[in-house]
Structure formats: C-alpha cells, structure tokens
Length: 342
Image (cartoon, rainbow, N blue to C red; front, side, top):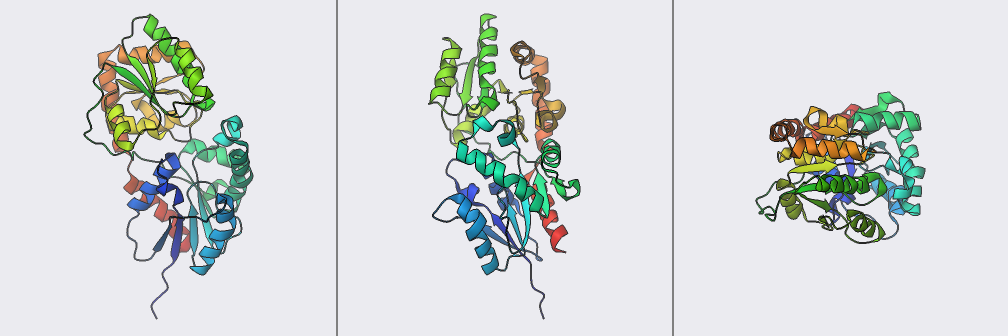
C-alpha cells in the first residue's frame, strides 16, 4: 500500500488582495517559494467565505480542513482556528495591536487582541519573523519558547526598470500615517534640515487623505513634503531606486521589510533604534533615537551630507539584503511542517 501523503493547508487569502500589505507579501512569497516535497501535499486556500472574516477563520475553515483531511494548517497572520481537526502553525509578525491599540479600529483591535494570544497558545508551532517578536510573544502570552521558531522575511518588491523621478533629490519614507510610524517627527526633522540648507524633498509613500494627512501637510509648514497615496509595485520600486536615502522612523516594527527592500537597491537606510529594526538592518543602517527629532536630523545629515558614509551604507545594505531570501525562509517553514508531521 502506498503511504498517505500528509496534507498541509495554507491560508493564503491575504496574498490575493489587490493592495498588498506586509503580511500579504509574506504569504505570497512563501507560497511561491515553497520547495517541492514528495512527502507533503500543499493545499493553498485563496478565498474565504461571504461573511465576516472571523466566521470563515474560526468556523468555515475548520470544516474545510476536515473535509480535505488536512493534517496541518498554517495561518500566516495570527488567525489560526482555535477549534480545528488538525495541527496548527501560526505566524505572528508583531504585536503592535497590543502596544499601539489606537492605531487600529475597535473591531480590528478587538479581533487581534482576543484571538492572537489564544492562537499562539494553542498552536503546535509559532513562527515569528524576528527574534524581537518571538521574545514579545513568549513574554506577553506565556508561550513555551520551545514551540517558537524565528524565520525572517526577505525582499519581495520586484526590481524593475521604470524611470526614477528626475525632478531633484529626495528622501523617502514608506508607510501609512498611523502614530506608530512616527512620520510627524520625521517631518519636523526635515524642517530642521531644510533650514540648514538641505536641498532634498521629502516623499511619503502612503495614504494621502484624511485627518492625519492634513496634519502632516500642516506640519510641513510650506516645505516640500509630498504624500503619494498608495503606489503600485512598479511605481514604488522606481521611487525607492531614485531616493538618496530611505528614512524609517517607526516606533514599532516586527521586522521592517521596507528597510531590506531599500538595501536590495543600494539605497542607504536611516532607521529608528527601536524594536526589531536594529536586528533586521544590522550594521548596514544608520540609527537614531526615534523620539529625538534632533538625533533623527543628525542621522539623516550624517548620511546625505557625507558621500563616503552614503556609499558605505549602500554597499553594506546590498550585502545585508543578499543574506535574506524567500527560498531560505520557505525551506525553514517547510522544516517546521516536517518537524510536526514526521
């Protein structure tokens, strides 16, 4: 008799969102890079149900898993079914919803805070994208660290040949306008630098409408700060390749994917000395204290005003990004599946 091949179901719904966010890129790259394993049968779930997501995740998905005789399910963004007919693996990217609850709508925040700790405690394995997040999960939720595995992200934004902007030098920040992204302090530091004679513009690739966008425009006080709105991968790649530096002032990140995207393009990175960012960037970025506008301005000045330092960070960044690959991360993820199934 031919032995039965274990079935691994992966909840990949986020990979099919037309406006990909970090966890959507994560699961898309993971699924695309899964190595062929004769001993495993991968089943990719690309669609949910018609009602609220939580109903699909906690009720419909377990029914589907039972119907397909799944041996293991991987939830790539916290929401592992709590009552399930098979073993479970959950990826937790960060716990920003615990630290910055006001950055989330009441419904979304409640869902994360109610279900993520239960998913982490019930999972046979918890994958975290950084050592920082892993330690946070163990400390906050009391998860046995023996069940936690650290598997990093890798650059995923395609590098293309779209012409870069040619209307003068600029600094770039990528992210939405939630308070944890700390963009208001970046705008304040930019004003300091402009008063000192900086010729660059500041481009914020993210939302360009709403009350927070208006606050940013007011804080710019006439200085050249541009909010782009959501960008396609092609346009974001071109914007990133043309930047003199990527500035990432975020107060909380579970990994900080955008900094390795910039590094892969040889763009120097200036990042907050906070949470997982020093772990992700290593020695290939310049760091600053995220609550200190003066330190932020000094860090930018030390990169864009110093050609030797600029070129050094460009070289170190390329080398750092080259250490990360989705092939390696997918192989480590499959090793977690095999650890449970064999």
